Length: 97
Image 1 (cartoon, helix red, strand yellow):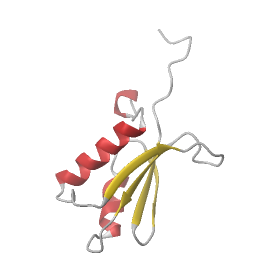
Image 2 (cartoon, helix red, strand yellow; image 1 turned 90 degrees about the horizontal axis):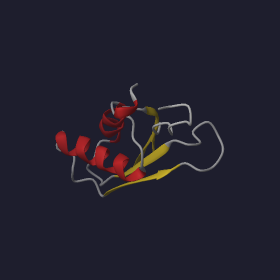
Image 3 (spheres, one colour; image 1 turned 60 degrees about the vertical axis):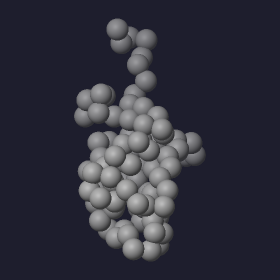
Image 4 (spheres, helix red, strand yellow; image 1 turned 180 degrees about the vertical axis):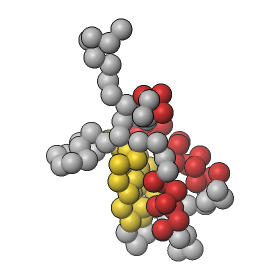
């Protein structure tokens, strides 16, 4: 995936998730937040977006929507939450012009 499609910050991930939810009429979720995963494990270095749901939301539909976002590597669901893990854009190296 080209780097211009990858997210670079938790704020950008939150905006992208909100835009995607709003585009399909799901802007009324309780809350959307994002943070960088800083602990070990296979998802270290990804950006986790948490979508907090109201009782009337369909977890599966929201999980399916989040899976379509660029860079998504995993989506997990719980009773009142859907979590999406997305790959962050790589930092430019010293060899990159």
